[in-house]
Length: 263
Image (tube, rainbow, N blue to C red; front, side, top):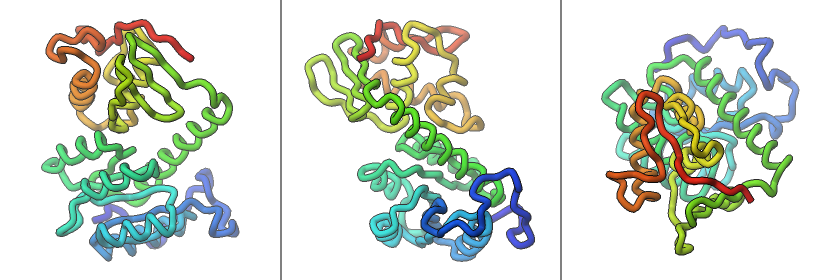
């Protein structure tokens, strides 16, 4: 359900992608996965009015075909897909692609699904009912972050290897290995959290800073960062119940205690 009408909306003159004459192939494309055909049509009308090309899928199998054949720039994924599980589709996407994903969920009863979705690698979420203008703003913000990250990578492609306490993180390969050289799998949220710590070792970091670093949207309850800290500790610490690497800084947040070498 949308909270504002689609028809009669006026494009923001300050927004991006306002060239209506731009070739279709140069416009960003969004794959909207939602089993509500009315929602599909409303979003398609609004987003295409604002120069976002829309590809639609009503279920998991169709979404897989669209991802394989169209390579969208971003995916808008409803976690409630009738008989299909949106979280399973998100896992499938993350197993094969880094395409940005914005998940859509229902009300407070879906709060756990939102947190799980973010931990599985979603870039943002939006709660129904929402206005298409808000969705458009989130699409632009996610794509802008991706473009900024790509630009930073191109400017300094060799930077990205960290060593700490025998561990090594290779950012170019997104690969973490333990002191014995065994690869350790990280979710997207765990990876972003670890990079935030490695960029500021031995400095207390607030929950707000870590939320921003892991791209968790500001209105996710703050304890969600504690959940990700616990998951990361389980992968780094010998005894997660008595952490030595990621320690709690009472009244502030967390601190990464090991010295870090940048290569």
